[in-house]
Length: 64
Image (cartoon, rainbow, N blue to C red; front, side, top):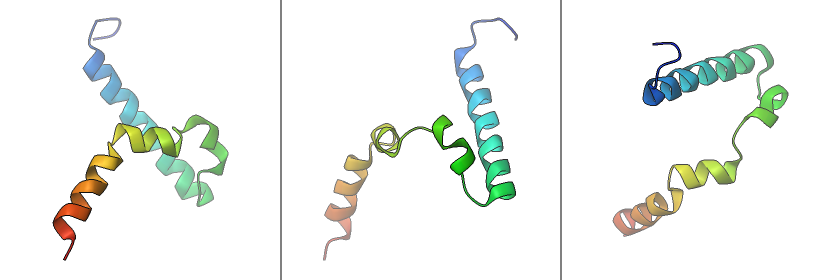
């Protein structure tokens, strides 16, 4: 629905295209150096996936 207010669909479509582009660069170059400036920082990635919460769970449930 071009121009519509379908933000979830648009964000999914943008994410799909971004993944395709990253995988193409990896295939061609073997790394992401060429597009690194277009990627989220590792810090942003950790925040978005809530890495601290997952690390806490891992320590809690895998500790023996």
